[in-house]
Length: 592
Ligand SMILES: Nc1ncnc2c1ncn2[C@@H]1O[C@H](COP(=O)(O)OP(=O)(O)OP(=O)(O)O)[C@@H](O)[C@H]1O
Image (cartoon, rainbow, N blue to C red; front, side, top):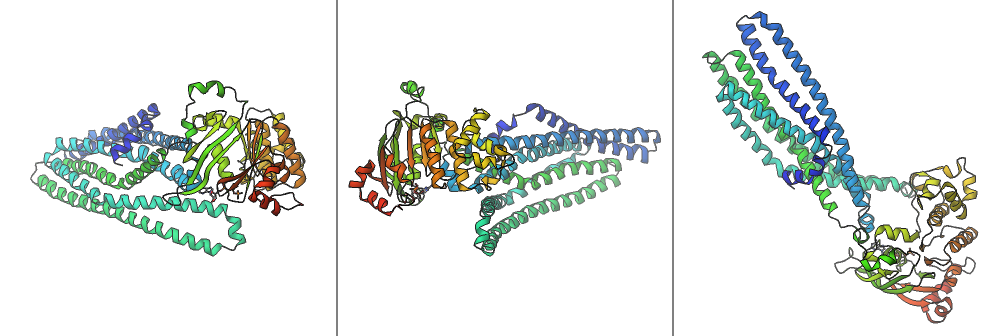
């Protein structure tokens, strides 16, 4: 991405908060103007006061210089405060845009990429881009203005010096071009290494228990060492080329200053200019050349921002999940306004894992079923047979390669995410708990519920006894990911959420796998009574629940190989028979 394309891409940020930005640039202009007048005052001081002896001008000139210095300092403080404020705000603006998009892309991408990619986008890339806009770009504008103004003044003072400054500017500007592609290449590598390391560090923290229990400290250290090797190498090369570029620019500037002293000194000796004018000219020459060096210096930040901008643009191109773009067809409006119906149908659904091979690996193969409103359908099959994927497909969380999912006669593709969320309630095997209290974690099931309703749902999910033992009861803060809770307690929180939500269709993926038999029975009774007349899709190891289901579907390697009631399948379906045979009589469990 070129500098121009990048600036075009961040236009919405540039025009945001216009009052702050205009005030910041006004301060920048003030700072420039006040500091550029200074050399003229000193030239006059040397020539008029020191050489020609007009001592009465000494104090006015010195006081004027001090006033200008104070005004420049004030403007500078204003400029830095305003642009720092904009930097933070813009970083947060970019993060907000990214977070909004993360919420809309297919879950599959997040599961595949892991946290590293998203942490790098939200941290490193957002900050680099905002820094470019509010620091690098502002500095560049300030440097270019400084150069132009100083060159103008220099022209008025001595055209030969001005010409030399102009030629030097062109010469110094070619230096970054030589290093540009190298710096960009290594900046990109540094950013990629940081992304990988970020994800890896999250893993190191999340996997602390495994690392400790398997004694993996050395293994982890070795993995870290390998990863850091790449970062150190790319980062060193990037710094090497950046500093080489700066050093070449500095060397050229030093040669130019020596040349100026030589040419200016000869003019002073020939009395064609005064000493004051020579000193002021050198000062303005510095004002022309130093900004070029500073601009060259910021090349590294520009490259970093370009890489960040590319990454952000590429990520924002990821199409949202279908349910975020779907518009319900006009004829379905009536149906959508009547959410009480809840019939779920799959028609020849195919889901492949396209990352395994170019032709993909089949996860769901021509799956067909119809669950009328109010029925309970149980899905059974060995581990890995596709039950969770089937549920995710029903919830619009995985892309299908073929087939249709129909809810109340409407294709799932035409149902919006908010509508899917309103109709479906879900309990997965793992329950994610957010930072906050138990109460807040249950209340997310229905943010409009009253405190009593939340408490009631918690009690119905069999959490009362547990909560009553806690000093802060339902308002007890939850540790990171609910670490202080047992698997069963976390599952009961998930069940309390759906009890609070009261959905039309309930999807239960091993909802009680972590509960003991008695708690399981109590919780399921609550769920059954809440869902009376509603539709349930359940994958469970509980024989009782399976036996009582209106329909049972037997899955094998992503295919439905048997369908019917418990009795029918017991007679005709070999796989169901073997699953039953393997079930433990005591626990009443079918191994799924
Ligand atoms: N995100 C994914 N990407 C690629 N393959 C996947 C993904 N999720 C699941 N699979 C594969 O799809 C198949 C079905 O997995 P799924 O989790 O749906 O099975 P399951 O019947 O729910 O298993 P379990 O009872 O053990 O939870 C497995 O072979 C699994 O490896």
